Picture 1: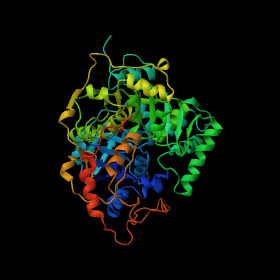
Picture 2 (picture 1 turned 45 degrees about the horizontal axis):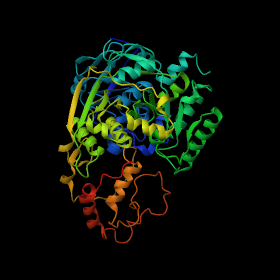
Picture 3 (picture 1 turned 180 degrees about the vertical axis):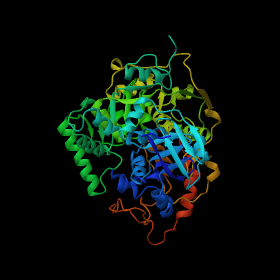
Picture 4 (picture 1 turned 60 degrees about the vertical axis):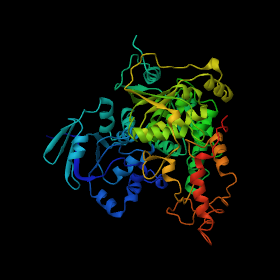
Length: 168
Length: 375
């Protein structure tokens, strides 16, 4: 199964209710540079977790990932760390919006999140609405057209620029 | 015609699309876009886009809170960027670092009105429901996009009713009710839902208490929160410069469909506290009485209005806590220029007089409050 909108690779797993303060502490919000933010992604969990994050492609988590603040940098810092998608049992609504709007694939699939193993492999195809991991396949409701277009363009701002024919 | 919830009506009005059902995605045109100090990110993004014309400059509201006054040269220049942008674009609703907490500033200035659809770069933008508006939090890219296009995609949420009746006991407040609900329903208990607060207690609440309710609804994952505007709302708005005849109130219909109804009897409630490390780790405050506290912060956009501060002052009155300050230990490189007050507690004999103070503070924190501080 091949698709232009298939992303994946190595998995790093987290638990439930992962707060935006853990993903990117408030004191680093003075930056919007993905690479700079990535240096501080998950800093409260220690250097070992940060190193594993940078070596991973997909973040897998339990319920309510990204709860807390509306900071968009919670999604940006993951992109900067090389993360291509977040698969969680559920998301806080602002994190979900921020993920899509910054071009980070966010998939709600409790079954896939449950089946994932830390350090294992996972692939997400958001056109087909499918997550593959550990030899199993999990379906999720495909995104509505408007969200798919935003993701395909790499986020909301690039999407608006593409629609208007580049910088005006 | 089918009966509609507040969220259905508010999004229908903002999108111009009739007969919406939960789950439907539409483009909505907000009445107001609130951004705080994060506005500098919107301005930089706008520059990157090469856009210099906004959809409707009068729907832009900027409040320089979250990082104010500036603690670093970087933040000071961010504020400066926002100031000059506001001047250049002719943004009338610009409030500088001395104005206060963004949400409260907008409400006190009559910019938030019943039935409006408001977005803000703060997750607690649900607070605008205290005046009967639809308020919800978004990221800075979405504010930038709204500046340019005037719209954003919105999913029509399911609605949940929370009904609070009964009288609260002495020393028990709106915050206690919300902590109890957050503890019972969980930090994701109402994810993506529109919450409508009703019941005799809710009807009796001041606007300040309604703000605390709607603000904290987000801590259960809510998309927005709502208290039906009434005479209390209209009196507040009139004082804020939004007279009754200018208001277009939206109310849910009798018989509208709700995912569930949660009921709480205020009379059965005891004082509540959320303890580390999650917001829904809520206990009766008696369970932690005597716990040593290292720092006490009084503030936040949920509870730093005049009446809240009066309550706090009443509690602290007669308990000499020494001068305000923070411990010498710091864990971040930001904000190293606090100056006077910092480290005073850490110097000399750090535990002198502390234990007794802290214990009395935890014990006294609820029991001594009086319900007479409201407006």
